[in-house]
Image (cartoon, rainbow, N blue to C red; front, top):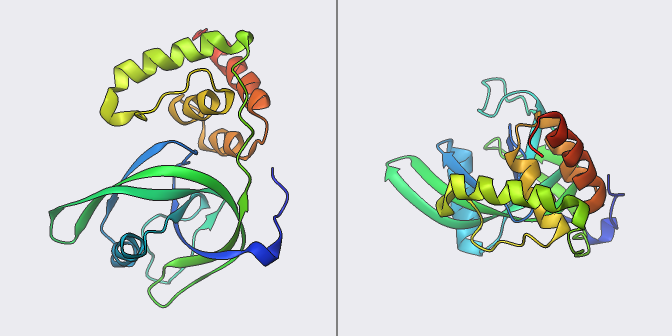
Length: 206
C-alpha cells in the first residue's frame, strides 16, 4: 500500500462508494438515480472535475434511512466522466474512465448524504515493458477483449505495458473483491502480475 502523501497537497473530492473496484485506465458504467449522486454528477460535469470511486467494505451502496455512511477502502481511483445519458427522468447513465489512484485522509458526509473526503494523490506506477514471462497473460487479455467487444474495453490498448496488462486482468478476472482491491493497492506492476499469473495457473487459464 502506498504511504500517505503530503497533507499539504490534500484536496477535497466527492466519493462514490461502490461494491466494485475501478482501476486506472478502466471503464466503469454507472446507473445514477440517487439525488446526491445526480447532483454530484452535474457538478463534476460543470466544473470538469472527477469524483472518487472506492470499494465498500461494510454497508450498502444505496442510502439508508439512518444516514449511516458505509465503510470503504481508503485507496481508490479517480473517475472521469466520459459521457452522460438520461434514458428517463431521474436516471443518469454515466460512462466513466479510471484516472489516478488516491488515498483518503479523512471524510465526512454533507447535508445531502454525499461523502466528501480530503485525499492525496498516489503517484502513477513507472511504465515498464511487459516481461516475457507474462506474455501468456497478455494473450489471455487479448482474447477477453475480443469477447467483450470495443464498447466494453478501453479503446487504447497497451499489451506491452506491465501496469496496463495487470490492471485490466485484475478488473476482468473473477477475483474476490478483497483481492481486486489488493491488486489496486499494490505499487509494483510485476508483483501484481506474479499474483495474477498464480491465480490464472490455478484456474487453468495459462
